[in-house]
Amino acid sequence: MTQYKIALLDGDGIGPEIMAEAIKILKLVSARNNITFILEHGAFGASAYFAHGNSFPEATKHLCDSADAILKGPIGLSHEESKKIPVDMQPERGALLPLRRRYNTFANFRPVYLPKNLAHFSPLKPEIIGNGIDFIIIRELVGGLYFGEKKTGVDATGKRFVKETLEYDEVQIERIARVAFETARKRKKVLHNIHKSNVLKSSVLWNEVVGEVGAEFPDVEIKHILVDAAATYLCLNPGLFDVMVMENMFGDILSDQGGGILGSLGLMPSACIGPDKAYYEPSHGSAPDIAGKNMANPYSMIGSVAMMLEMSFGMEKESRNVWHAMQSVFAQGYSTADLSKPGTEVKMISTNAFGDLVASELAKL
Ligand code: IPM
Ligand code: MN
Image (cartoon, rainbow, N blue to C red; front, side, top):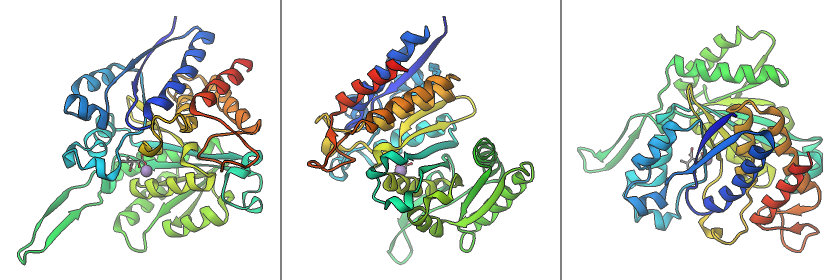
């Protein structure tokens, strides 16, 4: 019998609640496909820091090393709470970036998807949404400003200063470009390359290498677009885009904007793929303000499971079934609190109820 070990990193805030719903789906998929998922939890994030003095403990590293895939919940605390943790141990710098670096998960896939019948969740007008929103952001995840050299200090005149560097080499650009072209080839064969080459030299090299890799994909059309203009078009005409590729920081910002045009970051799952290991996570934060209230939207966490089934375990059909199950729950008029105001026609449901409904829809497929 096929057996996969999955490391579950619940994380902080709403993490454990939405992870519990993802586990329901994993268990159902495992039972009906005769596959064993060995599910092991590992401490990670601020909760790990408070329990073990380390936001990415050694035991969690070993668990992740031995896992076939990693499912990770959101991490982080409110700005005030964060100050209780030394800067370098704060969960973003102390756990998440080291996780990305450890497994060199350079390719981050962030689908931005809303079918036409769910257009009411989006803040955009129906005429702008047209037939729905459906594109994917491919974000380089282990380079750029996030991982460049950093220096802080006081200069000769006594002024505090900071210096952070944006570095890429051609190999890093080439490998993400190749992933993007391959993705575009499987979709509409149009790739938007997002850059800022009118100012940044890093973008000049980026565009050059993207163009070179593009020569290997003559069937894919490349469209170069400045990052600021892309931000505008994401609001004015998201239908322009199908596959977008960009460096780390641009991808961080535009993918949140992607969540914004869907109506909530709660609709943003993601896959982070490295040469030997992949991990899956919602693109949003840990929402400490609603933690423990059973009101978070587990869609992005369950969607991350769907991406794992497809990308790590080759279970395309079950992956599609999970997506369909989630869409059909919404199509029946249900909504989680992030997507609708109370008092509107929707049937508002809890974290738990959403997971149960998805499981029962999935069981029908
Ligand atoms: C994301 C998050 C992270 C990032 C934070 C938590 C460090 O915002 O995955 O987009 O900036 O990459
Ligand atoms: Mn982000």
